[in-house]
Amino acid sequence: MDQTNPMDWIQRECTLAARPRGFHLVTQEVLAALPEIREIEVGLLHLFLQHTSASLAINENADPDVRGDLERHFQQMVPERAPYYQHTLEGPDDMPAHIKSVMIGSALSLPIGQGRLRLGTWQGIYLCEHRQHGGRRHLVATLLGKKFPPG
Amino acid sequence: MDQTNPMDWIQRECTLAARPRGFHLVTQEVLAALPEIREIEVGLLHLFLQHTSASLAINENADPDVRGDLERHFQQMVPERAPYYQHTLEGPDDMPAHIKSVMIGSALSLPIGQGRLRLGTWQGIYLCEHRQHGGRRHLVATLLGKKFPPG
Amino acid sequence: MDQTNPMDWIQRECTLAARPRGFHLVTQEVLAALPEIREIEVGLLHLFLQHTSASLAINENADPDVRGDLERHFQQMVPERAPYYQHTLEGPDDMPAHIKSVMIGSALSLPIGQGRLRLGTWQGIYLCEHRQHGGRRHLVATLLGKKFPPG
Image 1 (cartoon, one colour):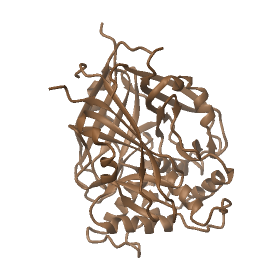
Image 2 (cartoon, chains in turn blue, red, green):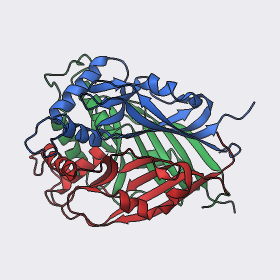
Image 3 (cartoon, chains in turn orange, cyan, brown):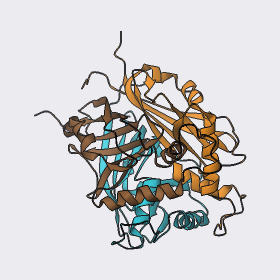
């Protein structure tokens, strides 16, 4: 264990562009907002979505059918207009959005090594948008790690 | 990146009061146990529930119908007395509780900035109690961050 | 808060042995790969699975029926050959595996205190293998924490 480099912290609010309901690959959008990842020898990236009707996940970055099937399955598993919903004033897509957000989660932590996210070959970061018109989504990104030694 | 302040760690066991089965807002109870959050300029709060039949989540802090609908939907999606359950000796609510705990998760990481949790306006911390009589629940709270500079 | 010991980081790739589809207890396999946990007074262990068809969870470490029931319930809740799946070329167990991976999650953070994982008495680490023949699974383990003071 190398104790020579102090800990660094960066925290930044990022805004993700508005997207329709569904599972969307946002890896490039997130990386573009956090160029300091390249300076980190070892660390973690913590992403936190400040919303209760969208979520963050990691899954396959290649075939878009995976993202379509995820959307179709979650619509089935968490249907609109279930007879037992009482929170209905904000539209039929609102309560299912809260349930999906609890199931998938609002926070994500990812390892950083040698200046890069240590994602697997087929992994990407998903914004899971559960509302029809969710608008832009706000993220708090917290980066903690040890910088490369100087020189 | 400011390298002048060393890293601080606090780890503490907290006990959440016993609650009936359902989704419960515990933001104030958690914050009251961790007054040191106010001293952190930037950091993370990690919460870990030491149980296998309850979970932690983030969701809406306003309309209590959201929490009621979550409970009703999870009861539907993970029913009691499914014909394929073999772990049945601890009561009909036990195996569904384990499944819900795996789905929602036992750990939660939240960003801290400027002495506060960086939750969105509508977000609160939920204890998801999956047993009828789960009793008090034990949390390990780990706080890591950079303190405000002195003076 | 003790500010005398600097932050330490360890990051290591671990490989988990191949297992059949199901929920598997891997606590001992993970701990054996990370002997440095014993040197950490307070910290966190972050585990990240570099795959999109398996996941990590925390649940009961005792009765194996819990793990069997989890497998049976997830097979029911996320069935093979759903009529709306379009990502079908990689076999009937592939798309359900992606969905389960999004539901349960690829990352896990656990508290470390006094040289040990702060798991509850009944908690263990699960590898949730969602493919019939998923093969060996790669983990990135990131350990951050404050070492015990020397002497």
